[in-house]
Figure 1 (cartoon, rainbow, N blue to C red):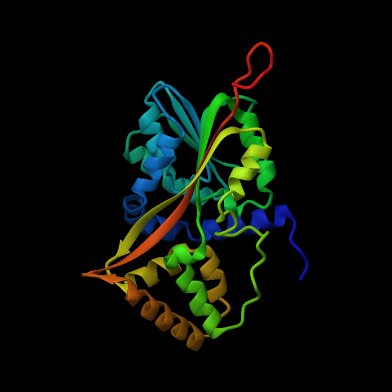
Figure 2: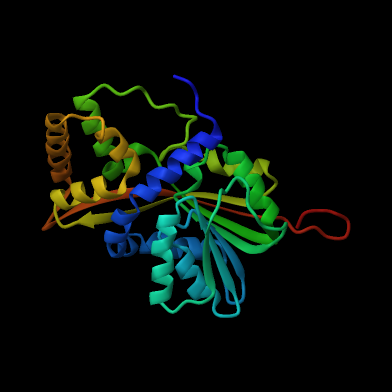
Length: 293
């Protein structure tokens, strides 16, 4: 198979995420509530406070950009970028409903940021960086547009064994059809899952005070069926795989996913553990002698 160029990868991702934008809007309140602890953690790790100018990478349907806008207040400002215009349309509607006038959203590629050097006091990113075809290039751009002393706070998924709600679907599909082994260097949900993966790239880019912590939480669904429906409506990579299945194979995969999900039954809900890597780093200050501080 011919290897795709970064431009081809980005174009495909843009198409995929635009396609599932309606699903994300349908499930918006559910995931905003389920991911609230992650969103607030990012705002804290980025050391946001009133009056700051903030960049959010991979804003999707608006978080953490919207919480950041509420945090920095009317004297601050937030710019959210994402590949998918239709996802950002959802974010704009949410900003309007919250009467937030200090946040704007624009399409853009994190590996080529259209901003001047030292434009932002802080940068946040939730579940974006692992999908980028050239992560070191994106991190170099992050370091460039950060002001000296500014913080990056990023969330990426930890390993598959600690995230069964993501892993189950892939395992079910593999039981029905043969899939090629994943390329660990290719963009994907678990690309930066191991301790030190992202932290090492940030260090190489010259950022300091790098922190890398695995954060454990959970999210829950009313039933295995609700979990299955949400998965097939928002997960672009799963949609791509299931589109290749026959009707009988799709029924088989659905049965396997629902059966696997029942093992996480707790009371009247399905509760999945999740594990997220929170990685934060600071752009160094330099004194008159040029030494880092």
